[in-house]
Amino acid sequence: MPVIAIVAIGAAAYFYNQVLILRENPQAVAQKEATDLIAKVGRLVVLPTGETPTIATVSDPAALKDQSFFASAQKGDKVFIYPQAKKAILYSVTLDKILDVAPLNIGTQAAVASQTPKTTTKK
Image (cartoon, rainbow, N blue to C red):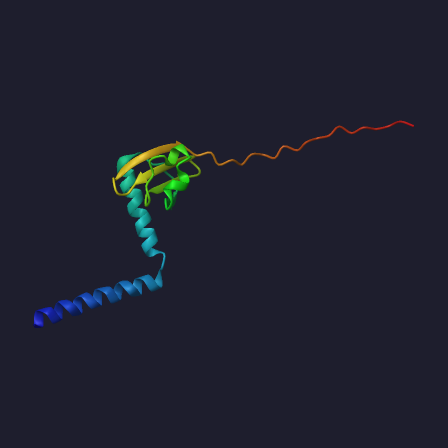
């Protein structure tokens, strides 16, 4: 019985400490998850250096089926977006595989100003 009490007190102290850490830095869990995911994907493919990706989760693959990049995506898959390297990577968490890598085309196209010729009339 005393052993069970000691284990229970130890577990309670551990979880209490984890709650305190989360209160101090609520982003800590998200940052750790992102770091772990980047490390997993980095084992499978060479990732761009010098930038941290934006990571999105596929929540509705049926809505994305018309896009070829998401053709084999499933709910819960992760999309790594590297805007400077202009790359997007689709990663399956359940399969631990890269499903697709595609060039990223984020358009910052310069607006083309239409210049109308000035007409002058002489009197």
